Image (cartoon, rainbow, N blue to C red):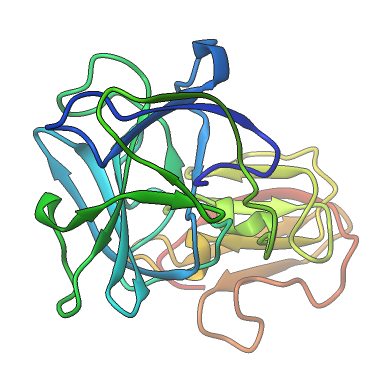
Length: 247
């Protein structure tokens, strides 16, 4: 399922004009707005766009003609991923929202098949399968589904929104995060590793100068030997940082 491992969900097909798509919300409808949406299988982001009906929309190509589509996302569809980006089964791609023609927080989810081409639409919808179980039919509901999206868990840095710089306490890009898209006059975080823009450069946001409490500074920028900003000497504490066009 397109959600973190072990989380519980309610699945609905509704009428014949909606099936075989699923509308998914938190089990018991206790509040779905803002919950993370993950890629439900490995693939490549083939489309990120706005539609008056589906709102913020992402489509992922999984190869051999298979696609998934994710509707009504809370944030702009390029917030977490970009077109052409490779995703793992548990890569975060967005959050549940109410955008487009949606008056309540849920994820409209589709599995699609088109033997050729890199963009699909509702004509290519097929019955949804999760873990070998088919979920389809008119006005059907499954009130107690559990996500088994438990493999290939990505490092925390893959959740860093585009246009932000994210610093992590763990040397492997995990742990406590401090993120910002603006200059920070000070930071109390003891930080070891940084990533930004999911590793993709973005004009105007590809250089950030970091100053350490222990003295000295470092320029983080995409495309150097230090890649996504890995500090060669871990354990230093960041005092402040600011964006700049060039270091």
